[in-house]
Length: 264
Image 1: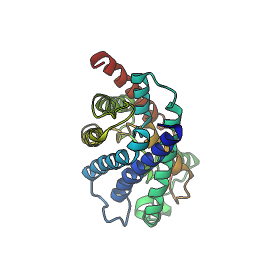
Image 2: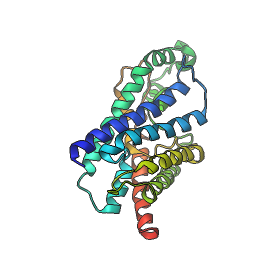
Image 3: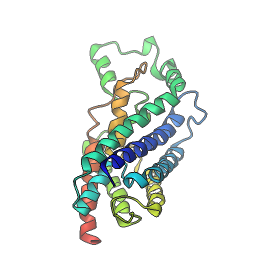
């Protein structure tokens, strides 16, 4: 596969992944959405179906990595590092495009949600000190969860370990089954299995951090959240942002090492 095919495939596939995955988060979260409060099951299955759709669409072009941690693990497994930057660039761009499309699809719901005084607070609920205002701006805003992940309990070590563990599960599943003939991406069976694995990770390991398990999935939409003209959007929580990037990359490398030890 050519570099242009890889870039186009990863951009389209990751955009679809985030459009459908972020879309289910928006549907469950935002005011005036018909699916509001549908719950965690809707989110986990929504992300699983998003993976399935994205993989089947992009696999013919790029092998459907859609995740820098998967790309890293496959590079370690195969010893082929030449296309890693192309994969990563397509994944990040695609994630940003997908996040922008979620905003476009739910434009009215975002506005209704972020101008509702019961959600963002009225004049009496606003921070009254410069320090409190700064904390609001730097922390996680009320719709950041539509775009990116965040912990229920902020504990750096635990949050990092949770992301590592979840990514190891995902990447081991990718490495041990369903690869295409070139070994550089998912085959037809692998797409279905991986989608089900993502649902399983969400149900079993998603509670602590929201299971990013994909650096591009978290970083690209977080950048878009920071750039979008959303009223009362609050901060993009950049203090936490390194964990859903570093954790999955470490997890991908660990999974590749385990693969070499146990399966190669």
